[in-house]
Amino acid sequence: MTSPLARIVAGLLCSTLLFVVLGEAAARWLGIIDILNGTPRRLYERTDIPEMPYRLRPNTTLDLQKHQVNINSLGLRGPEPPAKHRRMRQFLVLGDSVVFGASVSDEQTLANQLNRLAEAREWEANFLNAGVPGYNTESEAAAYDMLGEQIAPDEIILGVSLNDFGTTPVLNAFGVMTQRRDKDPPTWLQEKSELYLLFRWGLKAARGEHWFQATNTADNEETRKQFHALNAMVEHRHRKFYAAPEDNAWQRIKRSLTRLRDQAARDGVPFTVVIFPESFQFDDPPFRLPQRNWLDLCAELGIDAIDLWPAFAASESPIEELFFDTQHPNAAGIEVAAAAIADHLLTRDASAQPQ
Image 1: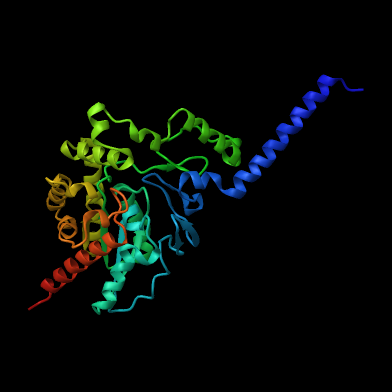
Image 2: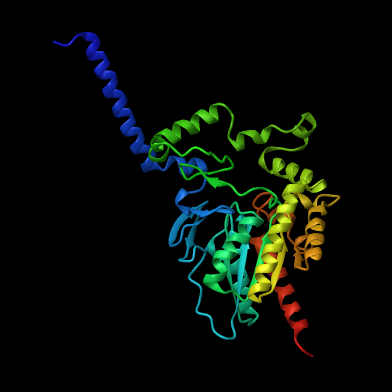
């Protein structure tokens, strides 16, 4: 006959086991981690390329921020590339979440809006969306190494965001993006248990260690009054960097641009850099120092460059109606960008024609 204590212990063990089983099932079925993270983890897959820790998972369709996202067999957002013919000029558009199209549908991305303009202007051109959220210039150069052989584009366009001086995140043991690069291999529990991840997520939140919890903590009291939440933190970081670019980060950008320039020259294709503005740059006075830095670097390296700040400033729409957040243009802002890029490319090509 079992003792009361043994029955209590057995009951607790059964209850704990039931909680773990049901909790694990609920975490997986409800996709709680992906809801908290904001990005379904199956959008990405790891690579063994150091400068490009992950890529978009080929042949994937999922919902992201209320929009359906389709990744084709090449790992590019959008439909399968059309068959090339002799007169068609194919553009590979590299970039990060701005080029990828954060917060917009497949139809509203930069590449697709450029394709619509090409059709409307009877321009034999096709634009492929090689944007990947989180990439920096170094990752984009590595991406071209892989995609250039598969696609053999006729031209490369690199969409530059002002945060390209940062490092590309990695995927942790759970498949979640992080800037923390753990050297130790993940444990079985870290790789297999969604409930364990949820527990770790909650514990981190209780300690205030998530990036979004840090957005209200700035350098000093003056900064806390001046800036608010994530957009303000981004603005503060970018103003600070471009006022005095940190040498290692800027040299990494320079090396990556040089690499892309040389890759394009090797393949005999033009290479154009497109510099996207951010919403805070249109204050009075405007903050155009980042564009000057990028334009000077492109001039030094002999790279064609497009500054989109004037196109956004000249838009009939208020600046706040052209951005989803500080960094990301919305569909209307991407439309402004696409028109400016198309105008530049067509004018350049026309001027290059023999008279």
